[in-house]
Image 1 (cartoon, rainbow, N blue to C red):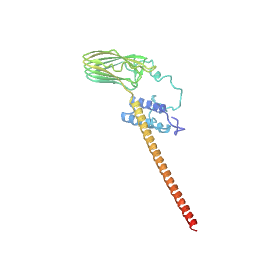
Image 2 (cartoon, rainbow, N blue to C red):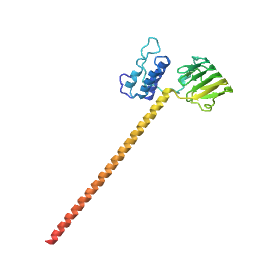
Image 3 (cartoon, rainbow, N blue to C red):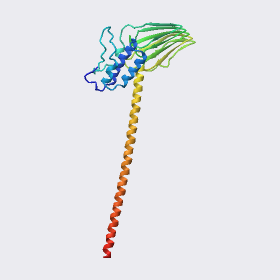
Image 4 (cartoon, rainbow, N blue to C red):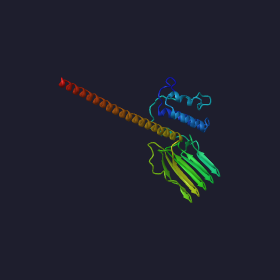
Length: 272
């Protein structure tokens, strides 16, 4: 954090770097959801480095005995693509999930393997890819749902292909056909559903929703300010027009008084 200049204005990229530290802390259990939401809200409301600095000051680094993380606000060169850092080429952090009369979740910061297999029997599961990294540019999510259901959540920009088979059940195809962003991964949803279903949904992250909400709030504030300024300008125009009208009225009165005086003087001259 730039301690030497806390009054400098922070950019959206600066706030995103702090939000990333908060998401890591939430995934590691260092923050509960309430603390995470409070700090995330403060992050997106921050306007200067000085307001951002305290938000992550008490969060330790990934190393066991490391110092508190210092989020760099130095403006480095932009990455060639927003997805480049999320396709890692590493092994997946989790390759399967099972729910038998129960449920499972895969969400937050995790690495999706080239093939992830999920099974649900009289249960359900959620596979959330919004904050995940990807082992490859194309990954397969294989879902088997027997009298159960699963939900696959992907972020905007990811191409989705659904190839699952349903018997008295089905796979959600609504997100197919949406072109992916350049460099974004491709997610193929396969599997089998019997008396069950596999849903596919495209959602933004909570942090992105918060950012969009803040943008809309700021736009409303700016519109209100613009309307207020317009009303004030209109009021000033009315006052100025009224003042000019009064000035014209006074000038007319003075002119008529001058004419009457001149008329009286002419009459007086004729009498003498």
